[in-house]
Amino acid sequence: MYSSFCGCAFSSTRMGRYGEIAVATSALMKEYDVAIWAHHGMFCSGEDFDLTFGLMHTVEKSAEILVKMLSMRPDKRQTISPQNFRDLAKDFKVTLPEKFLYDK
Image (cartoon, rainbow, N blue to C red):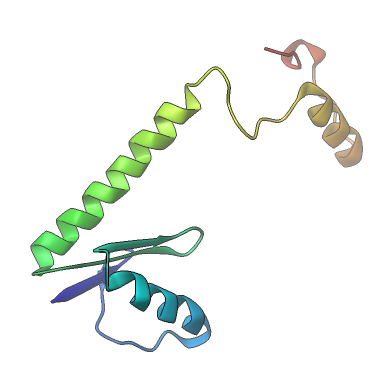
């Protein structure tokens, strides 16, 4: 069985200060072929390197498509309001043209 983490195959079980993530990943890998940790990466396993790399590549491309699709939604989440931009500009002592600050 091959394992891959962020595109690089490795066989070591020691992950240093990320030991908690290693233990949690190990538990997830008993049930799933892929574990994804926000801000850390992806861990995949498969029967051989080609299948594992293909799985990892498919998950990565699927996530890329999802992010692009979500960015086209009219009701975007986690948006910054025009007033938030004005407040940031004031705090950072920069001038933003008002013509770019409008509500959708």
